[in-house]
Amino acid sequence: MAVYTEVPQSTLEAFLENFRLGKAVSFEGIEQGIENSNYRLETTEGLFILTLYERRVDEADLPFFQSLTEHLAKKGIPCPAALPDKNGKTLHRLCGRPAALLPFMSGEWPRAVTTDHCRKLGAILAKLHLATADFEQSRANRLSVMDWRPLLEKSRKTAQRLEPGLSAAMMVELVEIETHWPNDLPSGIIHADLFPDNVFFEDGRISGLLDFTFACMDLLAYDLAICINAWCFEKNTGLNREKTQALLAGYEAVRPLSPEERKALPLLCRAAAMRFFATRLFDWVNTPDGPITWRKDPLQCWAQSLAHRELAGKFVGKSYL
Image (cartoon, rainbow, N blue to C red):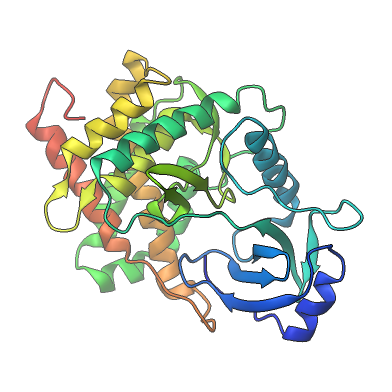
């Protein structure tokens, strides 16, 4: 979440006339995240989130995202399905951007991740994977393993400025991932961006899964790898194996991994690190400035990739996960 497109008060009031949600009481931008413009909206009828879709989001994909969250909500997965206006329309245009009004999800994302958070995350991720098994729509991953090379090629000068030798090293890592990518593992709809700030907790339970604008078809275990990197790394000490084991235990209590998925997890974790390294590196110099926006450090993801490689070297013949 972030703010790139400003919404004037008069525009907001005219937009709300299309809904039966009362009058605006307060309206403020939300700082977290880097992809879309998000506002916290309070009206006389309650709290909502107004999202204007920016940057990587293809407007043609928005019906897929909205159908997916509606499907998941019906399956009991706590996620915000877009609210219809007086005519039943859920997708709009506002200030030149596609936009949607979403219900406000109560709770807060965990600033200090615990093993309990990880266990519950694993369980809800597995439930999400099972819940989409009968979802009839599909969407290709626009940031799959085959899409990282063009991003990295465009960012080689940036990489070299950030760290000497990084430009060459990242291409070596990419070749290893491309060469050993496991195409024959179970696949389905994945969230693909389930970082802590996209998961709300309230009273010890997960109360909301947010931001499905990267949801797509890909390997289910790859989604799990993304979560391991996002939830189980400590700032100064690397991978927390206790949190990793809790996340995996929560997941497998709902959907057991196959032996092939287990074996592939270390490489998939390196791949997940590379995916976010590639986009963050590109964004480091290509993110447009906005009233509220911030960039994420690509070197954090590069460090995760190196950590996985080092652990794999220490645990030759058996998994460290």
